Length: 66
Picture 1 (cartoon, one colour):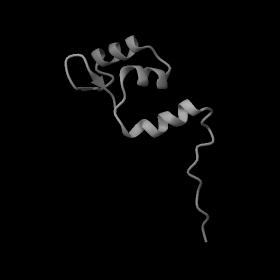
Picture 2 (spheres, helix red, strand yellow; picture 1 turned 90 degrees about the vertical axis):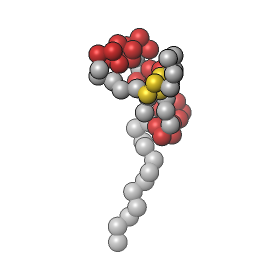
Picture 3 (cartoon, helix red, strand yellow; picture 1 turned 135 degrees about the vertical axis):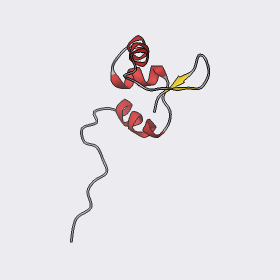
């Protein structure tokens, strides 16, 4: 009989990362994604313009990331 594997992620170090894993199912804002990845919001904009990162444009000003 095989034992069930734990669904916990022991490599997560704090509540912010745990919250981020829970939010992976929803669309993230520039600020949320930049904080999760540890990069600046400007870097995200540059990557979108370069075609390396895809975003969902909800309006002229609102971008969301999957």
